[in-house]
Amino acid sequence: MTNDITGAFLPAFLPPAALADPPSNAVAHRGLIYASIDGYRALELDLYVPADASSPVPLVVWIHGGAWIFGARSQPPGDWDPNLVFQSAIDAGLAVATIDYRHSREAPFPAQLHDSKAAVRYLRTFAPQLGIDADHIAVWGESAGGHLAALVALVNDPDLEGDIGATGVSSDVRAAVCFYPITNAATLPPTSDLPVNATQPPTPTEIMLEGSLWPYEEGLRRMSPLSYVRSDAPPMLLIHGEADRLVPVSQSQQLAQALKQVNADVHLITVPGLHHVFYAGDPEVHVGTAIEFLAGILKAPSPALGTK
Image (cartoon, rainbow, N blue to C red):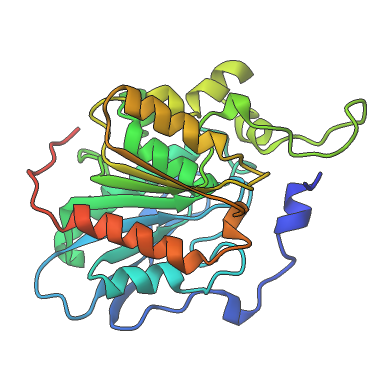
């Protein structure tokens, strides 16, 4: 395992072909500013809606990974096909939005959760203009994005809702898919193989919580989806490789067990031999499983959500 997260995973640049083009058979709304915050860059999202839709379509909000330190909405994880997630959603008759959020060196937690919830509220607010169904929205992410997806699905604390962007509508979602998410920050292993007595670089969670509202231990609890388990949580699908050394499979197992204990609707898939970002496996298989799960929920009739 690396002793330098960004040095190992953050390339110095990305060639043009590494970024996702708009999926085919889709109407593209790119660079929508979902929140403007004093002193920060504009927060943007891209939205793709099936071009052949004759009525408002369900929406999936994709949240990228990157240890909360790096990554971008148009950058796929690892060596995945750049458009695997977005084209798969469109082909299933689902709209898909991909969002940027403030990284941890820009702002400490809970800024990342505030941003993710603001994106959902924006899309719900402007659903009629964008051709999406405001009552059928789900969230999906990988790694750090999977962590944020779990938080969006589970957190209903007004103090963690945030007040940026569009307000006055709900940030609730119908379902969540989390690929190899962090769920209990207090039990994450070290991200360094340096000797114990050596100077250790800050961990992603330490960077995430530097300058946060809470003491460190309380911050770990507050940023952990495990802290917000509730019986009325939306259906959740967790997929995690059993050989993942960066985010151990126990992270998904802890959340799944806690949700099952309160009779929430949770599905856990662990895959032998699979590493982080689904290295040593075929991501298309697991993306297909996620799409099937999301389409089954989002295309089913359900009552309208309330407002917050």
